[in-house]
Image (cartoon, rainbow, N blue to C red; front, side, top):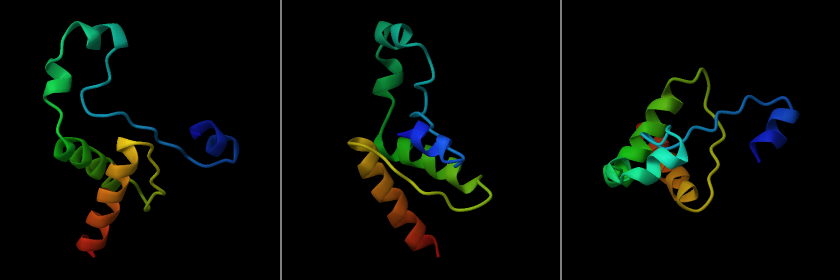
Length: 80
């Protein structure tokens, strides 16, 4: 999906979950990074990323990402 928007000349930031920036094999060797994740930690991570942008983004997500996108949308409504 990100490539579709890049081709259409949109700037796309497809950030992963915090702490998941390692190779898959490394993540499979231990569960420490995954065990430390909570919904709040993930949403806070995206919230900080979004607030650093020069203008409000379009937020999309699939599965859990869709739920996180809804939480971020609700946070934005309560901050204004």
